[in-house]
Image (cartoon, rainbow, N blue to C red; front, side, top):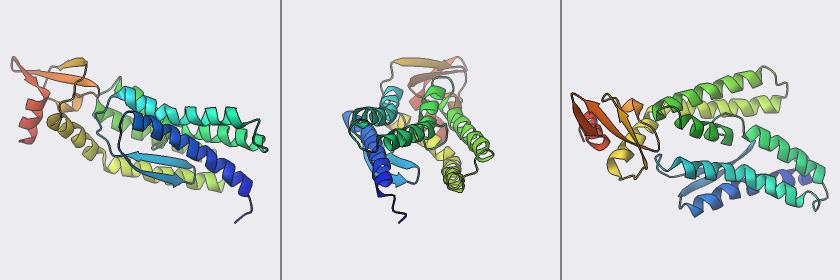
Length: 224
């Protein structure tokens, strides 16, 4: 409507290449793709997958989007007539997308890192808190109305994530009960607290001088 057709097409091409990076790597690992959404600040590929998929796969699928975008900009910067726009859009989109705000790639990468340090339930809460803090810091310094509206849109995504945080954790637990994941690493927990369970680990709980497998403990707690 504003007549900025070239700018729109260049920006759209970056979004498409970015999402294709995610999609191609996801197909390589046989992840199920639910839908692809185009948002005002970029795209979003939504997967219909188990929470307990390996962190390595999650990392490679997440990082493949920005890498595909960088590769596309590098290859075509001397071919596209408006290469200065391509580089500007690429840099801005890349920096913005790597901010630690849900549901941006930066937040996903941060979550993967947090999962290496904290139990899964705690990583959900920390990621939400850091997302809110980042938005508050940006809103206080941004004068562009468009950018402020985008941040409020992201804030809505964070609120939704907060609302379903317990559902996510329950899904994490029930997957452990229903499926036989073969994790290479083992973690011993000296209690029966499932809140201390990590991603990418098999757990053995120790209570009353007895060792309890995670499936058995989940079954007891939820009377499955």
